Length: 226
Ligand code: SF4
Image (cartoon, rainbow, N blue to C red):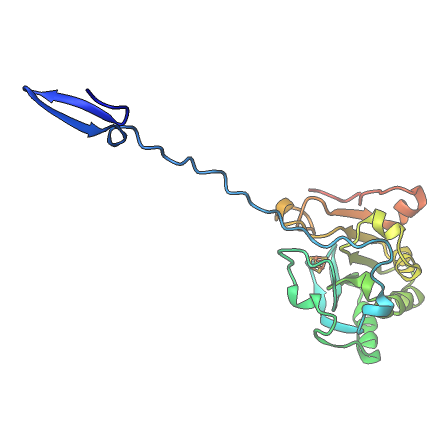
């Protein structure tokens, strides 16, 4: 008689006892769905990050006459330093406030001269974080308004959202008031979409700043295609 752990098998008059577990179907471990941790950028509290404390007034790059940083032919200034630390950031080196070279009066004069060409539509500020480098960006955009009025448009990218900027320091609000188009929000790897116009993830918006300030709500750029 077999006990609970054995099974009796009789073949052609011969009897054998074998351990029951050798016949039991093997338990195959079901692979649990690999849990992918979504990495997120940093979220500052209002006025937690101040240009006056962070900016080293450095520039990662300056690219005159390009076609990719907004509408038309543009001069692009890439400032250094950003604390959002978005995973997948397109310009990681420029997250350091010490990266690159010093912003000088000569460079500012060069930008103003480059903008003078009729075929140049305007200036683009990006980085790094322009709103954490207001010591560079504010005097520059003020000078552009002084010398060119509204003939040249000013675009800026920012990791801050529109709503966050409304609760921010006076220098950031002043910069916002002087630009025409804001591409807002951090780059979100989980919302990445390379088919979008002028932005890397679908949470980002292309905002008409003047109309939005007037209406006190976000108004999207009316030339948005996708
Ligand atoms: S906000 Fe822009 S520059 Fe800053 S970490 Fe994110 S992608 Fe990079």
